[in-house]
Length: 454
Image 1: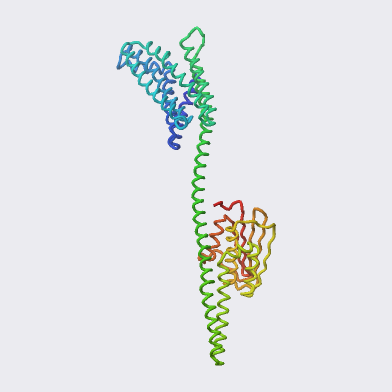
Image 2: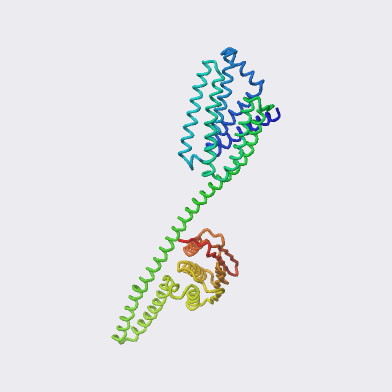
């Protein structure tokens, strides 16, 4: 009775658990497991003499006592066919044979449906003949052998095709089948002297349920791992699209910079040079001291304009990177800032020789360029420092000044800061900003292993 009560408790518990899991996970295996547990619960209740007699008496009110006895015997065995069918469906789905061996899955599905309909017909036939023993014989010598063949074939298919959760389940189901066979044989072969053969059936149910619980926990873990893997792939794909889009924008910006630099150098600078030549010709042709002064002033303005255009052209063009590399190009740019704007810029580089792609070198150079341009335009500083430290795979860029600082959380961002953020985001770098009334500091940490490969 204790084992029977335990089996009943297990079945009630797993009817609820499998139903709840099916609602949230939407996996068909748990729906069939809930139905299996429900019909198995009915069968277990029928194994209690009190419940069995109550059911037979209730049927007797409608069919008569003799018909009720035949009907109850047939119904008792047909319930076993129902719960074994649901258990088989559950096993096929739980072992993922519906995905990994569809042909076998469809064949077994058809066979299970056929057996349910066939034995429903046998049940009606044997009831009309008032011969429950014939139905039990058909169950024993037809249904059970066919299901045992399906059982062994399913084990073979599961070993070949299912995931690691199969081992818990297969061990539990093998124990359950063995115990069920012992119970069945012990019930119909008295000579074996098994005192209470149903105890084996109850024990088999309990052991199968315990090992199914372990298999269930492992399968849920596998399902979560797969869901997380798919989620990660989706996120990675979206991120890759964003990186590709950002790279396209940055490459487009560099191409546009190069085009403007070429137009400034070849177009406007050339026109100014032609104007200066014409002014020189006018100066030689017209001997007027007043005109000479005007022409000299115009020549100086044109010289300054040519110098500024040349500097703008060089800053826009990626040629410094191509010609000198990131370290030398940055050192030369710092020297130009000193010469043009009279701001002392101390540059230092620490570490081994860097061998980076031109794209990454260009991004680093543009970041330093934008930061120094902001210092020139907004900081009112007299001293700036640019420091590059390379410790493979990390590159640290430090740009600081002794100017008036800036508002850290300002919502308005200029084009320069937006460009810096775009390049930092592309390289998955980290930025630390510090600002006081005595100056500002930008520290950018780049991990070369984190930069997307495109």
